[in-house]
Image (cartoon, rainbow, N blue to C red):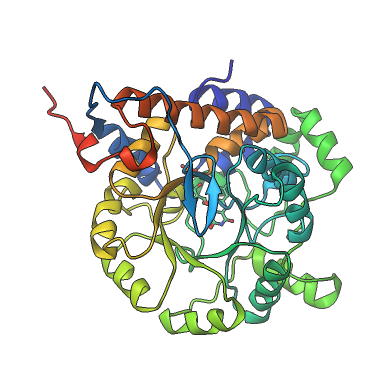
Length: 385
Ligand SMILES: Cc1cc2nc3c(=O)[nH]c(=O)nc-3n(C[C@H](O)[C@H](O)[C@H](O)COP(=O)(O)O)c2cc1C
């Protein structure tokens, strides 16, 4: 039975080739940041309040004028096509079907227009889809993607700011899964032990970054190479946001902010929301846990814009902790992705439904009938003895 993160990991490990499992499960360097995300969440306890009317519990929230069934979003995830053939579309359908927002990654393997149709098909006209942007050295690539995201009706643009360079992920290095990918003999043997995965991949074809350019040709090949090598535009600054603003008039969200000074700068530059994130521990291994970075950012922002959080969310109670500390919603990455690896669209959907149920049960147990009733005093560090 797939009840929790440990169950999902165990099943996904059996279904995926090792190099794919490690790509999803792994993090940077010694993976301390990954562990810190979990440890800091665990250190926080919820203080229940009793005898409050919880006969009906409402998990719904409103963000940028849209209603979400719960304060839970699916974080942008690159290379979903490697985890499951057609992964972006399956994950998008699972998310929209659960009434939750889906964020499509720059490094996705299905076209933004196709994913938009899938989201609307599964979630109706009100379904929410955001687009995540990496800005690579060739700025024309980003301009093209933003134009398409806008034309496709994406509701917000999420600029990821914590990948000026890719984190050093030693599991990927050990498995020879460095980009550009040239599988060695170990990988060939690895893949041979997972024939179902291999067959599906062969049927679908190698996942490509199909949103980087409109068509194929020389520009297309160049863009693929740039994404594979992750040649990001390291000259990007706060001033560059004006360039993005000229291309995008909807909500602009910065993902990967940890420092409260950056939160204040974001306010000064008219950013519409922040995601406090350390990329699931995949970038700077020495970074603080996201949940520990959240309170200083909340304090800096003074409720002027919504603040979201991700990295290490594994339970509904983790989401309640984040909300009690002031987050508007939490995003999840590996949880739904492992669900996708285990059971496709149904697996991802089940993970999201379970998280929502856990959230509702936790709210009932702490005496909060709706999201606004979750208070700062509900969360604290309990005495160790
Ligand atoms: C396999 C994988 C691929 C990811 N790809 C992207 C990406 O393309 N863009 C991005 O902004 N973040 C990416 N992230 C980071 C997630 O958006 C998110 O910050 C992280 O997964 C949250 O931590 P969690 O997995 O513990 O929930 C990726 C994470 C994983 C695990």
